[in-house]
Image (cartoon, rainbow, N blue to C red):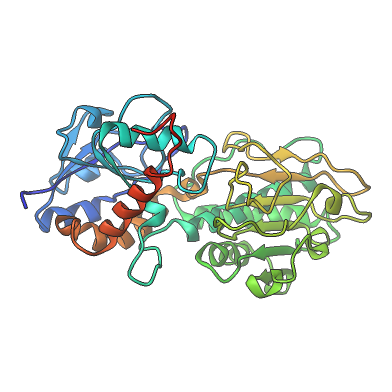
Length: 374
């Protein structure tokens, strides 16, 4: 097989600072015999010069569209909405295999262009485990913003949490949130927030718990729930009794009982102030947090939830690219995990992670409605 060219595209989603490849991973791929083009980007957590220093070719932003058809385009977030057919093989999160809103239109772009989607969410090893994910840093960042929102409600109850910037490092984020939580204790009788993390044993939940501890929340104030605790089916009154609820349960194709409902949140003596849905799939019929229908953003991180009863104001955080809060560290961890699989792209038509992903793509293309079929 001839030399493979990977084309790292710049991200177009607003305030997305992550990168599918770090400079160190690009250097490793160059040494493995791959050719890499990297689009220039002023938003990426890594500077263009960092890529240039490892010997990569820098190309214009958005130039992937004109790249030779045998180039493999790698990015993270889905491409901007368009009717344009896609002619390349793309490595990215597609968000179109679980019946999400607009799935057929997006997937049909690959089919009509005879391209290919290697969906990062479904890159799995022989045992079905994902080879790379942002889960840990999604939970980590979600917990950070949830604690910011809790502290803000106590310190400034008449104003919603303001814009949240990307942090240069995880340690700086931890220090900021710890100060915010400490400042809020004086408005909460010296009590730390009670936090419940559902999905606490997974990568995402582990990140959420780790951040709470790093921000000074005592372990005794953190309820760690996983599949055993939710097996009885919700809604769960324990959620209403805490201050912060962080949902880290991966959404599959099978509906599960809702963890909360408008009715359960309207019960007397509700203490819950903040819900952070790290899984964040509001238009999925399997969503166990059916109390919101829109995404929030880093500029407006919280959305109000209209509930009855005598409890405090309730807000939900539904940001769909949370790891961008600590983009550099999240990108480094993700790309390091993906590297072993990337090194096998020269065998992608043989058994392995890439062939499994291709077969899954082909299976989902067969599900396209007639109006979208190629």
